Length: 336
Ligand code: TXA
Ligand code: MG
Image (cartoon, rainbow, N blue to C red; front, side, top):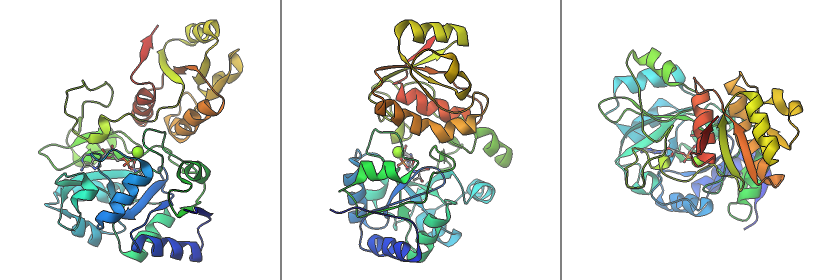
């Protein structure tokens, strides 16, 4: 298959809509990461996404909508809390898990009765959803297991020959995937940390949002994940990554003594006598979120073998950064 890489114009957006109506797959930018989109109401389209991504069949898709009428089409038993969160954070980087309607096939939810729903704010993807009037299934546009792509060229490299079209909307401004919160049970539970924080949701809901197991520690082999994504291998570069929780001087001594590669904050690049890749400013979790996935791919490009990563803050957006880095490091953390 020939893969086109086009800037979003009236013509290329029209082409994207036509491809989606045929049940095929298009990579489209969102404010978080690039997504691999297909008609969520069409099981064949869902199968095409699974195939292009080589995604494990038990991992469900997030369904993307452009307005509240569509919300009523895809979800039922919608609680008051869902409306509160949607009004506060949509369009934006928040996915809410609710009970699904019959319009959404099990092919999209991997057999679950629930569906994750998000109204993205990127104007390109919003326009395509509202033009087609199709709720779009959209996992991140990487091949399964790889870091999520935050620019079109990376998507193109992963997906060339697999899908007909990649729309190039430039760099994603958030850089980590949406926050995923479940409102399908008796209490709100955070399944995946993201740019919208637990504290921000608690402020809106005036109640506690629980943290799912698997976010900051590894699930045991036989332990059941509340969200399938929590048990899958993720974000892994080819290098062996280990997170080091230590003062800078101790960190420096370790990386330099082993001549490892440093995955560090911008401020330290010049102070380390080893190869390094930086992932944002030390005190600014939002810049770390923007740069982390790109940094993980860069480690592969420079052929890094062993990588020592500086420990990020775990507060606010930092929890999203730490969660992704922890998975890239296969949960290896060393405290010095
Ligand atoms: O920012 C994002 O969310 C991006 C952009 C493209 O919108 N999409 C994305 O999709 O990250 P994906 O498929 O890579 O991650 C979806 C996560 C997975 O961890 C999946 O297990 C979880 O959401 N998920 C989806 N539906 C679920 C459900 N019904 N119950 C529990 N977890 C669910
Ligand atoms: Mg993903």
